[in-house]
Image (cartoon, rainbow, N blue to C red; front, side):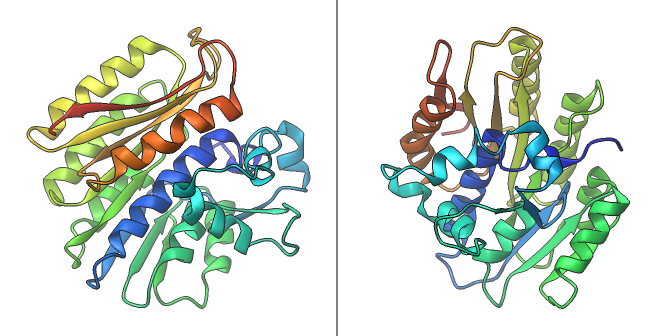
Length: 280
C-alpha cells in the first residue's frame, strides 16, 4: 500500500506502456462494435508533473519530456502523443500526464466502457472525482487481482484487460501469471496486457515461460525496452506481455521500441525488441 504512481508518472516505463495501450485501443476502434476495458491497477486519472511528487524523482524529465520535445517521432506514436498533448494547457508546455484510465478514455467512443480498479484509498478517491460525471466509466476501490476475477467476462465480446501491478510483493510475477490464467479462463478472446519490470533476466524468463504455458495455442508476444544492461538490482527496462494481440501490433511495436530504447537509454545494453512467446 506504500506505492504511489505519482512519483513515477511520465517515466519511460509509462511511455512504453501507454504507447502500446493506445495502439491496441486504436485497433479496437476499427470495428463499430463496442469494446470493454478493465484497468486493474489504475492509479489516478492524471498527474501534475510540476508538483513535488513528480519533481522529486525527475522520471518525467527523462521520460515523456524527452519524447514531447522531439520532432522525429515515429508515426505510430501519434495516437499516444495526441492524447498527451490534449491534456496540456499550453501546446508546447508539458504539465499534465494522463494515467492509463485517461489514455483509454480519451480514445473511447460512445458505445465503449471502462472499468477501473484501485485499492489505494487516496488514488481511488482521485479517480472517482476524475470520472464522477462519466457514465461510461466505473471506479472500484478493490484489489486489482480481485477485479480480474469479478468483472470478467464482460457483456462485450471485444476488449482488453490491463494488469499493471506495483511489484511490491516478492511473488508478484507468480501472481501476475496466475491472474492471466484466471482471466483467460473467464474471457478467452480478450486481449490481455501485463506490465513487468526488467531487473533479473532469470526472473523475467521464468515469468515469460509461465505466460507461454498459460496461453496454450493462443498468440502471445513480449514487447520490451531496455535502457541499460540488467544487473539484477536496478530497473534496467520494462516489458509488456500482450496475449491475443492485434495482428498489427508486432509490426507497429517494432517501429518504435528501438527508437524509445535509444531515446531513453542510448548506451550499452539499450534495446527495443518484440519477442514471440507462443502462437504465430
